[in-house]
Image 1 (cartoon, rainbow, N blue to C red):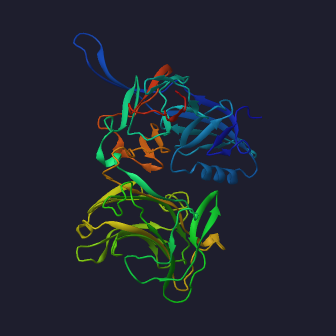
Image 2: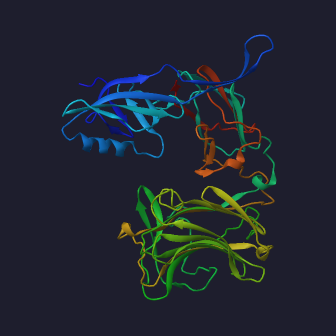
Image 3: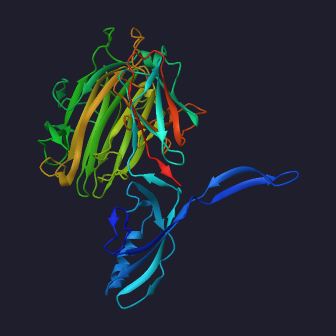
Length: 497
């Protein structure tokens, strides 16, 4: 009986392979860059730890060994490293791929022998669970964490921060590096200190709206449908329910008046809209979702639309705006596939976070982890007054309804509206509002805020950092005016050569 068993890509291979030997070298090869010394020896300039190889000697016992060989070939046919776990190290895993073919020796009619060579690109074993550190001591407004890394190489921390009040800056410091995000001086800057959140719609009737009076970049929609609220996958959505499935373009709309700010002023040149939508449709389904911002003359200013009006998976996400002749134009078009795969579809049910910012004649739109800036002379000086949402169908074409989730979905989960540069309110929302979830991920060198990539927040000259083996300190520096410390956890895999 095999003493050691292995799992690869979450597949237990004990029913296929009898393991005879696992050859795991001590440490890794090292690539040494050196230069000549004047009298004797050399000067070492750099030592680089190279990938690791693990060789597994095994047997296959079966009359039908060729079938098992094909099965193994399929299991090992991966395009990126997968988890490799040995039963004698159940608390660790490797990220591995199989290199070279596996030569087999036919020992008998029932037995074949061979060797598998696993290639470990990062050269380390990982702990199968993340170590979590939440305790800290406080020095002023700064938090000090005692860290213990029982691995024998550096670990890569994932720092989760849940804001309990707004903030504008975080600095992470230890003996291996310094990483800063935001602005350490942010306190009185006008752009952030004068923001007021005026609308917060969460797919329920508590935020008042008017149905089917929406104004959009076109007037082609017969607004005769109805909307309702749907609970799905633990979340609440707004969707179109009763629809007109006759010829033409039909739909249902929600309209929200932008409330007066704390000064009593109505209308704005400085908007911030954030929302989460879901737009998935099977190949023969069609539909549209629009957001429209209009002025005090009920004229369209700018917005977005997600539209699928043909068979297939293809759809468009358009940024729309009024040009200087008063005509709606597509400022930028993005393509997407309306599958439920998050890699294809930024608006899949598990994604869908979006935002749109206006600073007078400048629009900044978010799409698929990036921001895009546009200058729109046609909206300069025209104050936003109302926000409209449209769910639309194209005649008798298939449209996703709650009665058949298999057709897809066209949902609005929530949206928020903020007005920037409110002159009276100089002490307003900062870059990272209360409740914001900030993740500083040193494993993949990313920073996200509420699920949106914020790579531009990283201060120039910062470096993503690592945790050295043994005991060390990690300090989290906060905006110096913080009165409620955030909730913080530091998670990391220990690693071994």
